[in-house]
Length: 128
Length: 133
Image (cartoon, rainbow over all chains, first blue to last red; front, side, top):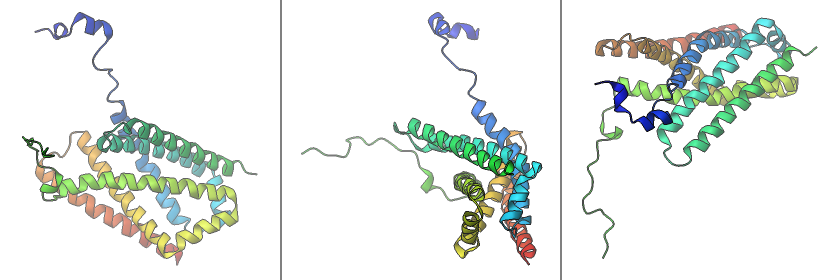
């Protein structure tokens, strides 16, 4: 049987059914995960190497173009991935009316932290 | 007198506490728990960057905390959580690419995740300790 006929004409007119972007969140969680593999490994290695740096050395390291660029990319991918992951956790365990406000608050929090972190890197980077 | 128990209690399917923990289920929830834990470390990362913008005094205050025994325990826990989530995440990416779904392979990759995350944590700490001198 033709699949088209399973839907009522009114349903078709109102555009019911899949919005066709349901896979977006799942996909972006994977893409940000792939980006985070090299970025987080770079960060861990850098922290190990600069473990004993004093303040001036740490600032000098963050002011290098490579470190500043990777740090901004790390913060972007990290909080993007965090927001997507925490949203799944909230949606899995919170079934009350609190679900949507929590997801929105969590997303705001992730955006605020990402922006604050990136601005901190830029302030260090462009400090004369 | 009204009873609070329903006259015909509905059957319930067995929930998570009835099952014996297995490597598969333990690693599944571990990946989620470490993900939530790591989001707190992401907040700490921003706090560390803020201390760097604030100046040497704030930076050394944060570093003194990291160097305290409590800070070192937190850092060690964060390192292990990170590597467990990283290795578990790579295992998930391989599954997403439709690889390693045989039961034998699932257990082999599960033990590999445990061994690799422990080894990477120890290597990272050994490297940082040897560099610290």
